[in-house]
Length: 408
Image 1 (cartoon, one colour):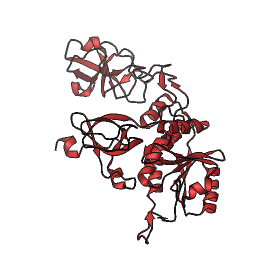
Image 2: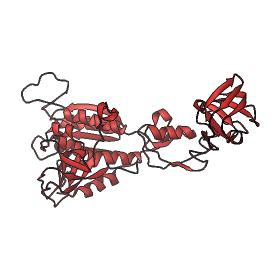
Image 3: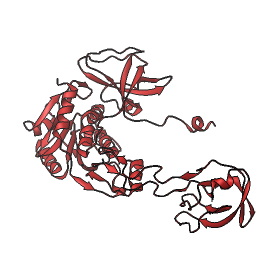
Image 4: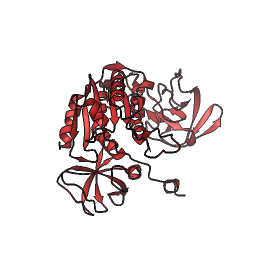
């Protein structure tokens, strides 16, 4: 068996990074910034009001309640025409540029109207109150985002603020195929004897959609070597990555191995679940042959496919976050392998992990209940209650009900 880190490094080193292109803000979600971005101007680009209120001179209001003459009203998107002089105020809306002469904004709630042309200031705020300075968020010339950052909603908004459409590596196209005579579409209402629904392709679609890739679904291919060879050839011509599930082990009917033996490396990785794993190239397209059992599929996807695709996209960080947790129940593992135990994670004075159900590689219910994988290293074997273990987090799920969050 080959060590897991060795195979992971081999896979990442073998997959090419995708070509660069500039995309619009609406196309950027999930892609990876390929070039660092520097602010071309201050953000905000001009001093503006943080509140609806009155722009005033601090010297006029420092002594406490005072009445000022209103000389203008300025909304967001408008430009003040008047300079605020002694004893004057300009009515101002949130986001509107600060008028010359003013250095403080008194919010509406701290004022009263003496008459339509006069405002009574009821407080003595510090100088600069409710004023957003030019460059208060970012100064021109300062770094905005580094290359290698995945673009999610806040990062895209940041790029929009500076008006820089991002240069990225293009969105990967990934083809997926399920194999096996026993597999039927998941929509099948009634199962015939010996048949099972296709959970692997369904799961892979969801995992790939989370990565933001474009998916080509090649469906289910029965245990027919000639047909599978044709399907994989077409998929390799259409996609940047091809993924199959099933047919990579040592059985007589392992059709992927029969179709690709001699061109693809079929590995036995020292990991559980997911020991059988195929990797190589179809022509020049990276190919991943995952096992048939659904838990093995997701573990293999997370350890090999996901980081490889992120590398192709140019991401700096390729692997899921890990936390250290205390084990709540005894876990028995094979010391010859790195074992990924499906666990639920809770917080009780610190992170606590407990198995989410049965650990056989076909048990989807435990996978669905898991927040992550407790990673038990090679050479460990049994893990006892109270021991510490790293947990690779698949999700950070919502954990507070309405009642808990709102105190109802």
